[in-house]
Structures are given as structure tokens and as C-alpha cells.
Image (cartoon, rainbow, N blue to C red):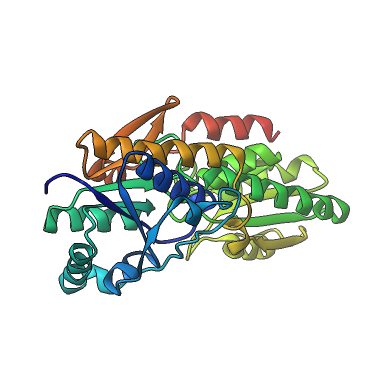
Length: 325
């Protein structure tokens, strides 16, 4: 593909606080670089259905503080098929879009990687996911805000847990990644975090019971990473059966974790990465995710960002264990 004159922006997959800040940064940095900018509504589904609009600076005014995404988002089954991707590409060509900037998580960037290979389209990804599970970046857009939201909720739940001398199992998002659970447990002073990455003990529940409750605490908070098989309800049911002397409650935070005005950190991160995306295109980069490492903007090939497991640091697990005595 030749010179880039027009870029398209879309948000895909689960929404994350800070996506609007990223849309704003990409749009304004693109215009400042002399590029035409088009907003694509409802992710890849909107690209297939030609839901595309010219964007100016006015389109992205007064959105930096808003949660969600003004471009809307959707999960597209049709884009998973070669026929769907061909429709998307034909609409790109018809609209004069030379390159795509995709704001999303694992699945969104995997879709961008496949699309870029099939049609030789320059694609740049921005890590927009509350899970913080993309490799090559210290933080993803939305993670910091969600972490703060969880901590605020846990602080409130602790008030009632202490009043009633209860164990609360609090389930948080994160899919296969335990970053939200582990760090919110440390930040909220929880007694334990049950996360997929912690394989130090075959039975994390038994480890928690022996370490915490049996030392006569007035209440206990356990943060559990969501899981179809071993979520908060699973552990609460086990306590009821195996330790009936304890009063147990469950709180599943659910989608309230995704909402809310983005934190200052997420607004700054999204702004830096959005400008970084335009810089990358001008430098001839393609098929990379823009990340942040040691406070420097970096370019991470899609395959590295998506396929590498991003581990929760063992140090964090140790810190929580020490402080929960």
C-alpha cells in the first residue's frame, strides 16, 4: 500500500474507560499530521455494514472525561469469516481508508492481525481492555480506572463485613488474568486473592482459611478472579459445606467495573498511545500494538502482544500473603 492519507478508527470487544480519550487523541493527532480521519461505528461489525463517518476535532470535543466509547462497540461473528473480512475490506477501499487503528483487547488485535495479513492493510492497535492481559505493555487503557472502581466497592463491602463478622467472596473481572484481583486485594487490604496464575498451592481456599480466619479476624475479604467453574459462588459453597461455622456472603461486581469516568492515569495513557499510533504510521510501522514500557511508548508486534502470557508477578502474591497476617 502506498502513502497513507486517510485513517479509520474503531473500538472493538468489551468497552474500557479511556477509549474515548484514545479516540480523541488519534483523531486530533491524525488531523494535526494532515490526515483525513473517519470514525467506524460498532467495531468490525460497523466496518462490514459501512457505518463510517468523517471525523473532525468537533466530533471528539468534550469526550476525554466520558466512560464507554462514542464509537460504540460490538463483537462481530461475521468478521471471523473470510467473507465478512472481504466485505470490511471492500468498504475500506470504497471509503478511501488507507490504514486502521483498532482500540481493543486480545480478540480485537487478533482480528486486526488476520485482516492485515489477508489484505495488506496497515493496522495499528491500542491496548483497550480492563483485564491488563496484553503483553508488551505495562498497563492497558481502562485497567487503572477499573482497579480503582473495584477498590471503592471493596471498601464499602468491608464496612458491612466487619459489622456482621462475615467472610465476603468478591468476584471481579479479568477472564484468564488475575491482575485486577491481585492488585485490588493489595490495595483494599483484602485477606486473599484467588487468581488463575497462583499455582503455589493446590487448594487456595484451604490456604486462605488456615492463614486468615483461624487467626480470629472480625471479617475477611477474598477477591476472586471470575471463572465459569471456580468463581466466587464456588468458593462460598465450599466454605458453607466444609466450614459451616463461618457466615459467608458473595458479591459479584459485574459490569459496574467497566463504567465510570476514566482516571487521570488512563486519560494520559490513552492520549500518549493515541498520538503514538499516528507517529507509528508516519514512521512506516504496521501491524503493531502501541504500548507503554518503563514510561516509554513502544511498538509491539501483534503476535507478541496477543500470544505471550503476561504473568502476575510472584512478588505481588508474596506481598499480599505477608500483609494479610
